[in-house]
Image 1 (cartoon, rainbow, N blue to C red):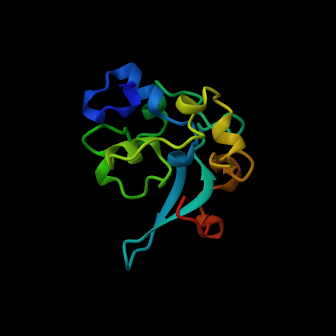
Image 2 (image 1 turned 120 degrees about the horizontal axis):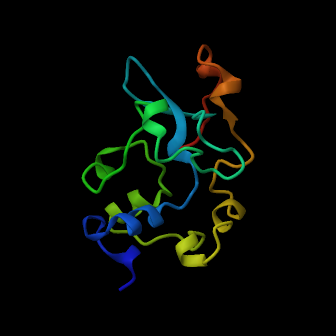
Image 3 (image 1 turned 180 degrees about the horizontal axis):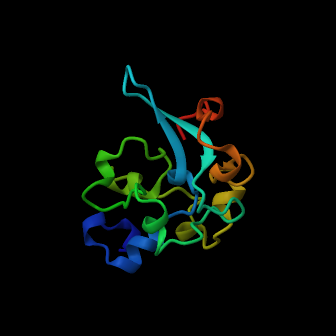
Amino acid sequence: MKFWEKPLDQLNREQWEALCDGCGKCCLHKLEDADTGEIHPTNVACKLLSLKTARCTNYRGRRAFVPDCVRLTAGNVSKIDWLPSTCAYRLRAEGKPLADWHPLISGDPESVHRAGISIRGWTVSERDAGDDNLEMYVIDDDL
């Protein structure tokens, strides 16, 4: 059995990190509707996210700069309903297989980008967007 077919709670740290498909969607800002609690994704990326690679530029030290950055664990993945439907952690928590474009399946880290799954090419950094008008960056997508 390949490690990515195992239950999440059986993965070691290295395997856990390798499970990430590198889409970058978990690093997009979200807005919560004050009345309904519904989460709306935006195309505004965290200031630490590289828009070219869709990877965090300071992964190990990210929480020092972004204190509310969510750390995914086997215990919380199934409770985070805003994770993209394509997220490898979400898929595995639901007992589903990884998509064909996932780098672990394809053997190519660029496959997530070629498949149009990543944030590459349609996002803006929060450094450019600012914090005042995130509503104008809401996208009509379930990610």
